[in-house]
Image 1 (cartoon, rainbow, N blue to C red):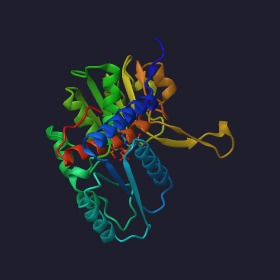
Image 2: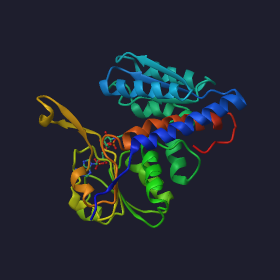
Image 3: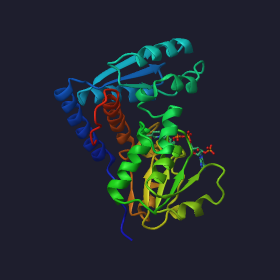
Image 4: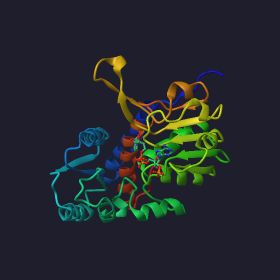
Length: 298
Ligand code: NDP
């Protein structure tokens, strides 16, 4: 069998950003509306700082209003809740994102619940979770939506396919399962207590790995000809690059999987870049809905 075709997430994200930029230009020209995203970062987690910087850059590059509010790591929970209340009431803010994880003194669930569901561009609010599972219009979590877009672009119709989602987090696994179900896939959700995990994986036409365990899925778990979407981002030691060096790998053993699958996303350069592009998309859609305008195809 020939090697799997690599799904190019960077190129995919670029196409999403181009559609976002065009939609923003139209909103400005026709309605004098500039979609605005406010990102709140509490503390100095290095990975979060990088994400937030990238989010800010890409939002501005798409012609949107980008605002980052940085708060001290010791910020009391009530101060953050008060800030969210102010942002909820600000007409120029169409999307609010509080970067996770938050420091220990702040209850994440309480913070997410405080965000106006219509401005919740992460799609994490329980109202939006309910909307997603019941098929109502909702901001869809950016990472799983990106996986779905790439699957549809690669495979076309997903109806009837057997999908296995490895991982059941609120951020990736569960919303991913809802999206695949809505596309009429037969969905299995696997997790750390799943028995015969390899066998379950081998039944899947579509395998989504979102576990956060470096290279956990071997080639032998993949059905020949399957499509593999690797959400995992794990940093491992890379002595071959020099002492103390590291590299990023996914949850799938890429080299092995490439020999068995028909299509696969690499890490880095697969799912990762698409997440921020979808955050911009969600913000434009949120702005349209808040202003009572038709939502453009993005
Ligand atoms: P969580 O840690 O919240 O969830 C991990 C899930 O994997 C849990 O459901 C857990 O099961 C399951 N799991 C863990 N170990 C095993 C195992 N040995 N066998 C079977 N199942 C297992 O992670 P997230 O969903 O937030 O993230 C998953 C990965 O995706 C991470 O690497 C993260 O960095 C990456 N990620 C990438 C994004 C992007 O590309 N932009 C965005 C978000 C995440 P159980 O529930 O039983 O504990």
